Amino acid sequence: MIYITRRERFNAAHRLYREDFSDEQNLEVFGKCSNPKWHGHNYELFVTVKGEINKETGFLVNLKQLSKVIREKVIVQLDHKNINLEVEFMRGKLASTENLAVGVWEELEQSVKSLGAELHCVKVTESENNFVEYFGT
Ligand code: NI
Image (cartoon, rainbow, N blue to C red):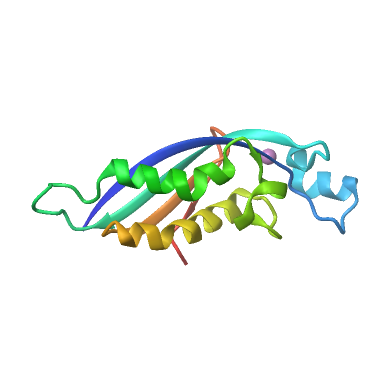
């Protein structure tokens, strides 16, 4: 079993909040990310897939194809968008990095299988110091 990771980047706006909370409660629970006027992050997305090396190519997957899949399935939906308002797979969910990682996983799982590999990890970094990793369960 071998693992390979592709990084893609996107920037997006979001707000962490609950409608049933006041602005004060949202600030207390979600901190600066609850700003009612939105804010953005430069996110990084690391997609790790696993499988066996193809003897003919020496590759696990063709990284150009993996990059294309990631861009077509998730980056176009996210880049320069408002995660709360515009991203179909985040509809009705809190726009946290955790939920984002799970959403990205669900968007990519089948397409990665079609490339002959298996999704291993979706890592989303929201800032230099904070990142989330999701392994499918
Ligand atoms: Ni934020």
